[in-house]
Amino acid sequence: MAAPRCAHVEGAEALDAVFPRDVGLFADAFPAEARYHFCGHGLRIAQHHGARLGVAAPVWEAVSGALALCQYFEEQQLDFQGKQVIELGAGTGIVGILATLLGGDVTLTDLPLALEQLRENVARNVPAEHMVRARIRALSWGLDHEQFPSGYDVILGADIIYLRDTYPLLLRTLQHLSGPSSTIYLASKMRQEHGTAEFFETLLPRHFACELVQRDEQENISIYRVTRR
Image (cartoon, rainbow, N blue to C red; front, top):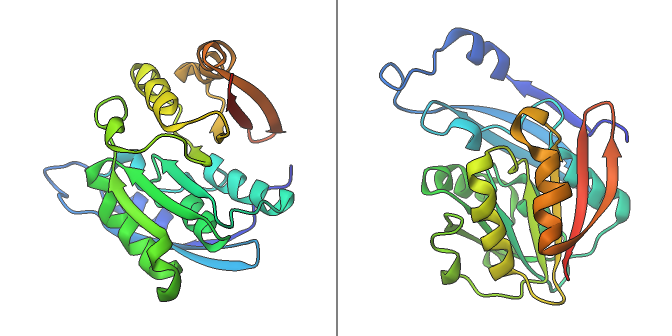
């Protein structure tokens, strides 16, 4: 798979080198901007780096599951028109934003501390006339997932498989949100130290049918299409 197309990150590396991420020294996040182009849409994504945001902040430069999933949408010419979509662990929101621009009725979710960044990026990239199709809500896996409906047409997740303790919570959430006709797309770096392969090869197949639809050996990124058994 070719590397996802993206423009340079303006000042991100310089900021990382100069500013520490100690909570006591730096309570507030500081922004950088990256530009991308997928499916005919130019995207301007703000990335707020700071100790409070942690991994919720960046798009995981330079190549990430989020960018790989966006490129997959482009290559497969996926159509989200009229579909009810939810993104888990949205982070910067780039995947859910693209799904919105491709016609989806999208709910972007993450932990409360990440919602401000999501709101900013939705406002930057979703035209006012389509804003009604992009909702932002807090969602803590395994805790408040039942506040959301079941049976979404599409469930999206990129770069969210990296903490073993969260895997049972994520599975519980996927089981609730999905229905017989749901399609789940999960994209991830296959990090051995995080047990990512175990999640996809052992834990997830206990409840879902999993198909590896794209593999980038160079970047060690896999994309799975998942459905209910």
